[in-house]
Amino acid sequence: MPEEKTTGLRTPDGRQPLVVVIDGNPATSAIAVMLLEQFDCRALPAHSTEDALKVLKSDQAVDLVLLDFALDDMDPLVAAQLIRALGPRGAMPIVALTSTAAVTSGPRGIAVGFARTLTKPYSPRELYAALDSSLGRVAEGAASH
Image (cartoon, rainbow, N blue to C red; front, side, top):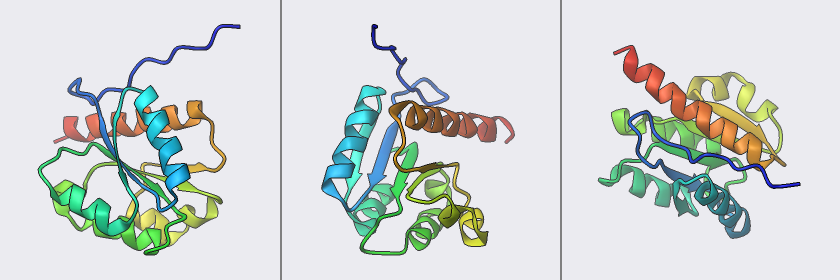
């Protein structure tokens, strides 16, 4: 049976999305980067929250953050709050990758405002759908301003 071909993801204005992958595990980070590249995204791996914040504060136009909850350097909910504290630069969608959905559905998780949450193990199709809908939310937010 032929493999299903997915179209490449695009930002609302038609650009190739730039996604920061925050994951302290090099193996799982490499898998996420590989999948993002298959979806025609540009991926920037960040192996710590500090690395990610440096990228997010730079001149690069980041469109989405993929945040693995298995971070060693910081509580991932705090990491998400630090991203949001960047103001307009921190307004991009954050997709959370967790081993249990309960982690991001509580009051603290809701306050951070994750665009989507994926529970591990997730399929490439689930990741694609989460990214696609999250990038679509950016378009909805821009249209309402």
